[in-house]
Each structure stands twice: as structure tokens, then as C-alpha cells.
Amino acid sequence: MQWGDVPYRTGAGLGIGFRASIPVIDPGPLVHVNNNLAVSFGVDWAHFGDCRYDSPGCYGNDFWVPIVMQWNFYLTDWWSVFPELGFAVRHTSWGWRYYADAPDPGPGRGRGRGPDPDFVDCGPRGVDYCRYSDAVIGVTPVSWLGTRFSVSNTLSVVLRVGYPSLTAGVSVRL
Image 1: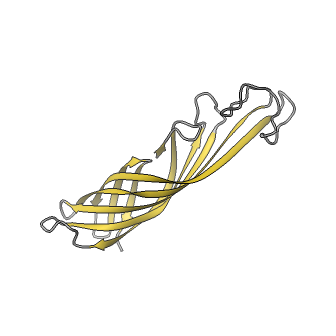
Image 2: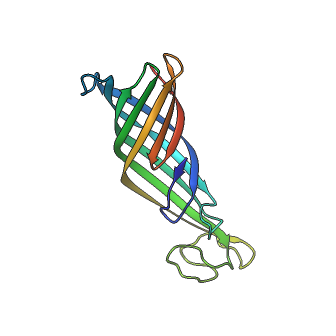
Image 3: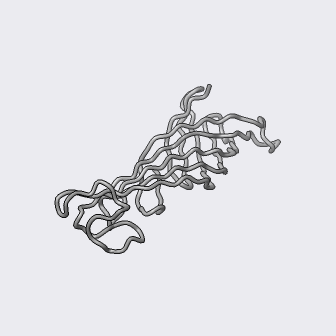
């Protein structure tokens, strides 16, 4: 689940993702604590539908490619906690669907009516709807706090909370 107020939307999106973590310093820098440092990377996707209270035709998609440093602290044989800090390449797309004779919901576009040259697929007024879409690509900092509960030697449940998302998943140790 991902939340956000950018660009031009509010609310939460739902999606799927994949992560891989590779230990790079094992044991970690703290001598008397069971810990390691890992590089973690993956791909996350979230879809936002009806994502603005003032524009029910709004939709959006976020694709994230996070690359983080993960510092694992093993509290017991079956339970660990970890902070993650890094950056992500983000591709965000969004759009609106609205009826051609309704006020224009686009940001910074005024309250005009009818076809707009920036909007495509506009039908006759009051009969069809118009669409507007856009996308941006950028790099943004990310951070999470997580915990891992092992249910066997190879299978764990992982929970993360932070920016930009709350995730729950299954981890398979190879």
C-alpha cells in the first residue's frame, strides 16, 4: 500500500512488488550484536483509482525501483528488525476522465468548459468524456523500518513501514 499527495492526487494505492537483499558485510560492524549489512533492491508498483475527492475520474500509477542499504539486527533465531535508507527511481503517471461539458479538473487549467487542446478524445459536449494524462520520472529518497519473522529456515514474513509505502510480504531465503 502506498500513500501520497503528489502529483495531483491523494489517497492510497495498492500494488505488488519484488525485493532482493544481498549481504555485503556479514557479520556486521557491531561486534557483540548479531547483525549484517545488505544491499536491497527491487521493483514496486501501485495503482491509484478515483484518487482525488474533487475529481472522481482521477487515476494514477507509480513504479519504483528502490536501492537501499539494509542493516539487519537479529534479535532471536526467528526474529529480526532492520532500517533501510536509500533512493528510488520513480515513474509516476496520472490522468483524469471527465465529461466534456463539466468544469476542467486539471491542475492550473482554470474552470473552463468544453474541449481543451491539451485534452484528447473529447466527444460532443454532454455526450462523451475527455481524458488528460501526464507522467514524470525522477529520483527520490526512501526509507523504511522493517521486521522479519521466520516461520522456517527458508520462509519469513516481512513487514515494512516508511516512505513511500507500507508493505507486507513473504521472504524466501536462498
